[in-house]
Each structure stands twice: as C-alpha cells, then as structure tokens.
Image (cartoon, rainbow, N blue to C red; front, top):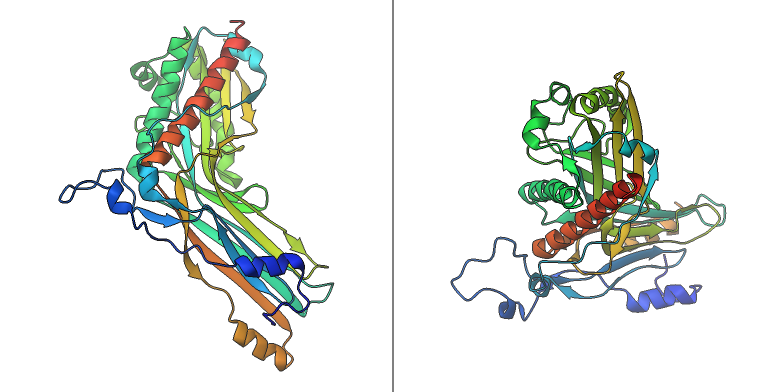
Length: 386
C-alpha cells in the first residue's frame, strides 16, 4: 500500500494532511478548575482529560488515514451548569382516543436506557475485484456512567412524569396502590439492568443498558428487548388491561433511550476502492424511544395505543473522545504480502473511549426525560380535550 499522494483523490490528500489520533491528555490548566489542594474531588467530577468531539477514518486503494475534530476539556465541562432546558421532543400518537376512557393514570414502569457502545464500518472491494479489499471501522464505548447514577436518573425520570401529570391536573395512581394491585404484581420484570444490541439508526450498531426505577424494575417486553425477548410485551398486555379495569386508570409505560453519538459510514460497496466512517459526540433522545398505553375495558380486554418519536438532540457538550487502541493492519506487512502476490487487503480499526463529565451528562439526561415527559403530558391533555 503506497502512502504517498500518487493516484490519490484530493479528499484523500486533505485527509492525510489533517491525519491525527484523538489521544486524550491532561488539561494543562486542569488544576485551575479542580478543588483546592487536599480537598477530595467532587462525587461527580470527571478525570479532567482533554479530547476530541469527532473522529473519522478512511481507507482507499493507496492511502489510509484518520483525523479528529474539536477539542474539549472535561475539567472545563465539570464547571458548566448542572441544569439544562428540556429537550424539544415531539411525539406522534396512535389510537390516542383510548387515553380519555378512564379518569386516572397509572405508571407501572418507566424504562430509561443508555447507549453504552457504538460501532460502524465501511467496506470496499475495489472496482469489482476481490483482490483489492479495504475496510475501516470505528468503535466507541461510554465511560463514566455508573449503575448507581443510571438508577438515580431512572428514579428521577419516573418522579418527574408523576409530577408533571399531577401539575396538569391528572389523578395519578400512587405507588403504594400500584404495588398492592394483584394484576400489577403478576407482571414479569427484569431483576437486573438489561443489555441489548442492534442497528437502530443509520448504519451504526449500538449497544445499550436499560434501567427502571428502583421500586418498579423494567417490565419484560418493555425494556428495549430485541428478537424473542420483545414477544413478552404481548403477554403483559392482557395483565395490564385487567389492572387498568381494576384501578380505573389508563396504564402508561414509557421507554426512553439516551444516545451519546452520531455515526455514519459509506457502507458496503463492491465497485469502489475506498470507504470512510465518521463519529461525532451528540447527546439526545434516540428515535427508538417509545410510549405504550393501555385501556382495559370492563370485559377484561386490553386496547393498546402508543407514541413514537423522531428523536431530539442538543449540541451542548458533555464529553470527549479519546483513542484507546489502533488495531489496524500493519502497512509494512500489507505491502510485503502484495509484493509476493497475496492480493491487496487492508483493514483499519480504531477504538475510542467516549468519556463523559458525569455532571453534564446527568444534566442533559434530565433535560431529555423532562422534555420527553412534557411532550407526553401535552399529548394526553390533547387527547382528553384539555
């Protein structure tokens, strides 16, 4: 594989000119933001490192390169406000007429999930030949979100929805009454946070972990399960319908997925000799987020409806990208194999930590569920003619 500009496109030359790894380093002014000497760091303090906000990788028939963009210090992010305005979430409803069929509202669960890892790759076989293959991949993982922090946010999301509903004048079934319900007790729940993985937007594969309020673990089938796990939702439907009838309430089960990164790639191409992947930190509500609701009629039937969203994002900073590994093929070995007739195959693979400022990430998470909840309350009011 030649590393010079011969035969390279203008874009490739520009890429190599800017090529550089997003290795994190200590903020030289970090001491200015931290606590006085001898004082323990704040519970929600980050490592204070400096890193990039976007990265990209590219490979072609005669070049390979990567670059990073933006530069942010976690120590500076730690000093930003711990509050943010609610995200402007919009919901699209189906069968919303059922929301007016019982006076009270019950929330048997609130699943709050967080994307913990994401990867994307691009492949090019080179003008139809299998002897010139190029692949590039970028993988990231979220660093700094603890289980306790995630559970605290799930508790807060549930409490915020109850508070917003009551402020709007709705009667919400209290937690003690809900837990005493025979039908609610029959709902199968996950006892531990549940992980999942899939291609849920663009060409990126993302992995997530779902949590629920401590008093109401995620209901099976309502925790972003995929495959056979999602079938459990149909089993819970009739149980929720009977609970709706018994408590004279519409049952609502929100599912909110918090995302941290936007990734895209050129995908799988057979008649091209190049590929690229881009990744940029972006906080928001993933479009997979969803709200189910059920009206149980007096015969014990369950009439379902739901809300979907196109997502909502904010440009506000919350973390950095720091390269942790370069698992790319050796260019020297590649060139040696080509010289003895083994074909031209090269794979670029870069791994990054997406390290957050816990304070900023928590503030934006609250902004996400406050905006999501506000949109839901608004739609319920609209369905009830308020």
